[in-house]
Image 1 (tube, rainbow, N blue to C red):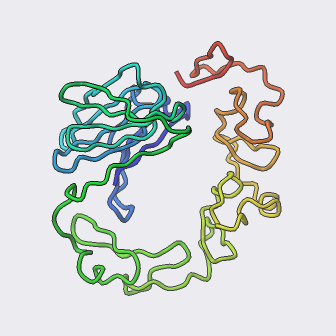
Image 2 (spheres, rainbow, N blue to C red; image 1 turned 60 degrees about the vertical axis):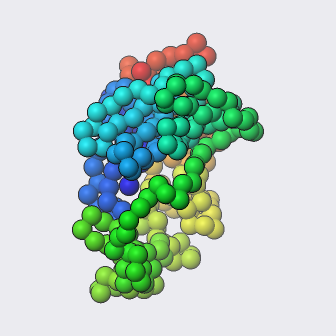
Length: 278
């Protein structure tokens, strides 16, 4: 599996990343990173050609990389790209949507012709094409779910069994059982789900019942990391680089309180006063 990571930590030189791992989460590694990759979005994998496509919402361009050589190439960077978010492909066609504008475009890679397909109500986060012939073959999970009682995850040398959030794998490595305790670095929800402590009070309902976002929980678990996160007045943790950037990231505007709106040495100040990564 492949996914993207928007890096805004100054110690990382503001480099975005495309990462990969086996389907069971093991063998995690950075597949591609560069100072010319900042906000990668919309990964689309062409399995037969061994190509991975993505769109960069910061640089406003579509790129591709060959999986076996890591050779990169800019596919398109025309004026239609303003803040692209989702991307998918079908044969020689690429489709993307504009997050802010709501437009959906098609690019013919052979002729480089761009067609506006339709306008939807923004914001649009994702777009997908479903092709029954895109993936062919078999794997270790095809018969009897690979012998797994719950999740069967394909890995290069076979399969790995896994369980839902509120369960753990038994000693036989195929059967799931209820989890009654959580590790020290996890928070136990009332529905027995274990979530990372860093997910508490981050504005997302990770427990499923808003327990991890309640005032009672947030007052008992000061989970913000002082070196990388800012603690909002409402208890929410946000990236320290979002402080004084002219955006109400906290939701209560406490991250903009008392700001002179000066940018750090690794940021560029827009005419609007907003600070963005260089």
